[in-house]
Length: 280
Image (cartoon, rainbow, N blue to C red; front, side, top):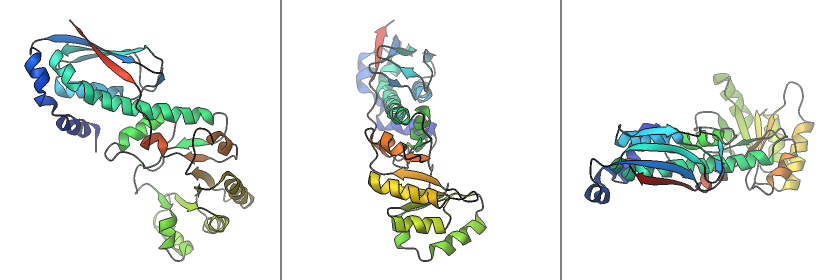
């Protein structure tokens, strides 16, 4: 789903063009100015989407940006100004803020995790745990916060998880056959114990994911992978599941390349940003 279609659906959902409060109480020819203000510090994300919401309602809305996307903002910062028809500004306020606050929240939380592993080799990756329809925006927000994107969708790469393994026989031959047909597609295998790690090493997985395991177990499995890595085969290690802001630094010190964190997209709190309207 592209952004314009998502905005159209959001405006329809909120009945923006049938806003009885604004239409009945605010004169059609009334002009207004609105200032977007940060109430908390964070990473700004979604300015173009925010602007597009008002342009979709009334092209006469004029936006002056003062701070760029992906910038760090502090409390009290004036992010942008909108000048135009008061009806359009009032009717579009909630929808525009919903996009901006959600995306900025993702960027801000992502940046907290990125900062926690700064100086090491590990990169913070997102997952597919996104609000349906919002994935493109959520993954852009992750990049805005300094993170990296895992799969955009199921067609991007192979990720063999526990449920796949329970239904698959002779994984080695399956992967061998797949690679004959798809030479440049990465293959990742999820592991929860040493036996599965040895299997993933045997089938030469490009990425080995250590999923939902304790720190001690993760450390042992990471060491096993490194011990069995050679010049011609050196898989990346990804840690996933149960990682939070308090534990991520410890896990990052294991020297892994990837740490995927679902909460940066599915549980990021909205960043507090306000649109204040003044009469012209």
